[in-house]
Image (cartoon, rainbow, N blue to C red; front, side, top):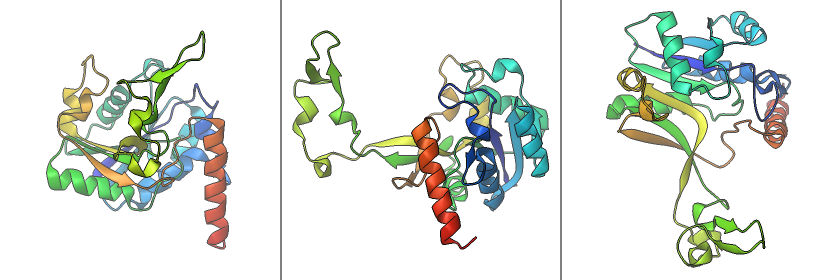
Amino acid sequence: MGAVAIILGRAGSRGVAGKNLAIVGGRECARWTIDAARDARCVSRIVLSTDSSELQRIGLESGIDVVLRPAELANATARVDDAARHALAQIGDDTIDHIVILYANVPVRPPGLIDEAIGVIRATNADSVQSYARVGKRHPWWTARVDEQDARVTPWEGDVLNHGVHRRQELPPAFVPDGGVLVVARNALVAGAGSASPHAFLGSDQRAVMTAEGDVIDIDSRIDLIVADAVLTERHEGAGL
């Protein structure tokens, strides 16, 4: 049985207003995620969860299922797992073992990323798999505290600023989720319902697929929007389209 992809795209946004409908690379941002889900060989069904009438229109035009998300699951404090569980309940398919959660505000993903993540969760029987990018110059060892009164800089942790490391090449590997893909086992998603922890649905056995710098662009700011548009426009022109 193929996995189901649930695309989450609400109307509101704290960072960039209407970012899921922003024109990126010549088309609405959400369409790029729909295409990524369509291109995934291991995805057998695509569902768009949204409270936006415009996103609903795009989903229906694209021939995918659309679930209308209630207001309490579409505000700034709503949890991803609650929205995913709601969408899963609405489609009513008990045969689904793995759910691919995709964000409509991520227009740039490397080809094959979704299938790679599904392959890992199937091979390992993990609770969840998500994409991680290596941290560069914003490495946690280079995080500091700055006093708001006198601007004095002190280490975030420990006694030595920057852990005594001043060359990027000497930093130990560190990784951060980049929003490219998140695959979760149905049992883990269901078990996370009602938990005080917003990450309980990821389960205890969490795995990763790695992406390179710039492979994934998650639009949370105006700069992200500009960069994503430039990347997609360059790809479009490079393909001679």
